[in-house]
Length: 220
Image (cartoon, rainbow, N blue to C red):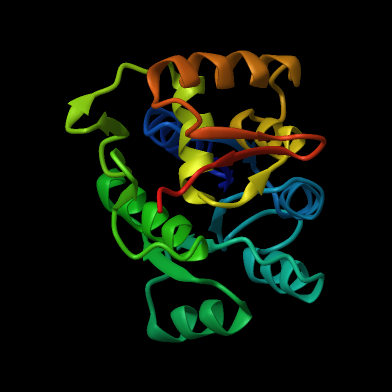
């Protein structure tokens, strides 16, 4: 899953990037509204953490332009302004949630997980597909109750498939959602990660849909 973090305070931006990346997400960064607007309009994000007080273009203007352009990714507004009118303005502009500074990283991650789950139609923090269970709270995957050992990229591929289980996911979509923008992407490596996952999962659980991509099969 891929997240855009928009924050103009350098120290906080790095803290957010480290915390969100440590939770298993691919992370892109922007420190001003113009850059954020461009990234949000051109890259596919599973969620955005957006500060309101940004240089060049404020966060509310960025958000309004995204929504006017039919960009529907979940957005968590982050701001030092905690008055009720700022919350109302953010929600009316199209925000999905609101967190005022100062905050605990654990709360931000919990809200981020919830936004991503809800956008995919999942209510629980645990994503279940037959004997396979992915706990989004601790990035832990189990198969029939036994923990699976996954690399960070194997986890990202499986997490994206779990969030979209039963749906065909193209190789391009996987590449766009497991790598940050500045990563040297190679679509062929997705096949490598799929191959490794298949060795750790029940046979035929990850289906290849010829010419289209992959699908995590939902057991009957």
